[in-house]
Length: 245
Ligand code: NAD
Image (cartoon, rainbow, N blue to C red; front, side, top):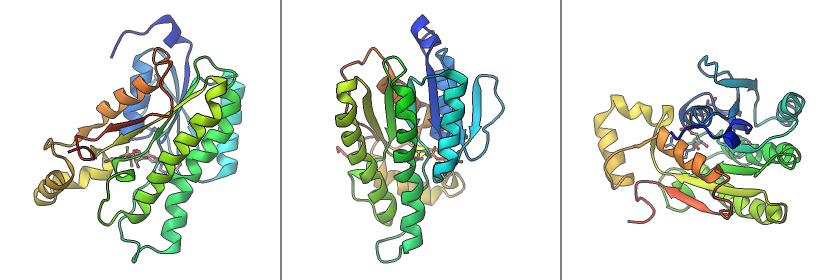
């Protein structure tokens, strides 16, 4: 991680789903760069002096509204918002129920929309303000038994482009990262199941290894970097080659 600069030091960053995995790695990366980081999650992440926490359920509008009111009271602005909170779901379109669709879209799509809606007024008061959405390689690569999840990430991809278009005139950049299979709680079950792990790697990861959460964190920090002032509406595929090879 590069040394904090004076411009990093004043920046306020909100990361949803910061309690574990990619979100925790991202919050830690921003904090290591000297920024003030607030994690929004259902529960607090591991204790650290470097990350503040606000309990927040992105699937609940009142909860998101209260969280961003608290952020506004505390800091009066935001510079970076990372829409990372997300949940997975297994199943095909035949097996997925309406409840599956509502639950996954409630977090993965409406959550991004809600957090963005409540954060944009604070971003307007920030400097080099920017939003990074966490999509997935499944938004572009057909993946078996991921019908609902894939559709939700496809929606995040389209929403990112629409948000970028809506906010471009105000100089607020909006980009998305598309991770492949990342080693987090979601994929951690493969640690105890070497055969399933090999299958996953063969099918999904041409490089032969899972992506580290710290790698995706660096990609998110890159997209949010004010030095990349001309980068908006981008889809940053960080997926070990799955969508390209
Ligand atoms: P994770 O399960 O390790 O962490 C997700 C975090 O989001 C948890 O701390 C959880 O408490 C929080 N969260 C869940 N629902 C929430 C809600 N309603 N409100 C607030 N917080 C909530 O998952 P991860 O693997 O780090 O995934 C993070 C993001 O990256 C997700 O959007 C996921 O879809 C995406 N992604 C993950 C992978 C992967 O292979 N792990 C690949 C591509 C994309």
